[in-house]
Image (cartoon, rainbow, N blue to C red; front, side, top):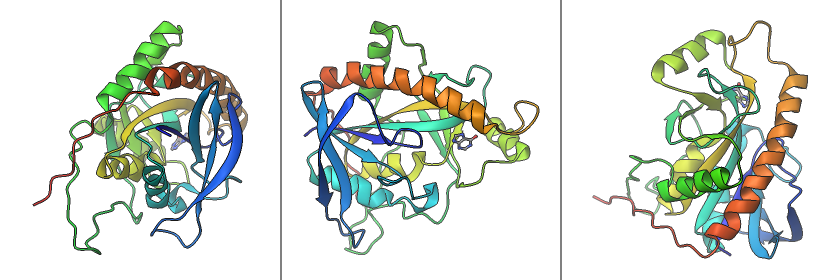
Length: 258
Ligand code: HPA
């Protein structure tokens, strides 16, 4: 089992993925097992974690990111493809667009955000110079080109705390900070994957213009429409990339220990 998909809002069920069994993986980070869905994409065995729980009951700040990532590590996963719905900030990031981000800004707080919290005496510092695994991002971009799926090949993902959406003033600040898209779950997930040396890349699906980027508020109906068109292309992209990376071992640098 080498490839995992973590699905977000609107992606907790997934057409191309044939669910065969649910594995309950115990971790030190939760009293309950993490439900990991094992199944097939075509002939390839993969695992799928619905980030917000199988019934979509966990808001972004209550997702047990450590348990999810540790469970994948326990299963021997080497590469994680994370699906994230986002609001668009920069001009090209319009609803329906897919982006493969290459940088992250973290505005979250109060989340269990590291495996190195000193409890077992281990201290390590993950190198986040390239917060997403470049080789895995490259595979996503190559596959998108091959399948003629338009993607923005780089951009900065800003992770906010949620569950509320941002104010227009907050979006203006994120924009000044260099953010292209904004979502609520990208961190600490990416950093935790790096700490456990899992290759990690994200497919961000723009589902709304970020607050203040269009007149009026964020429309639920428009979000759903962008999500359903985005879902189809994300499914195709995963369908193309997973066979391409299934036997690939991605090198991820170890954390720096003092
Ligand atoms: N802000 C934060 N997270 C999001 C948004 C947004 O506008 N859209 C989808 N996830």
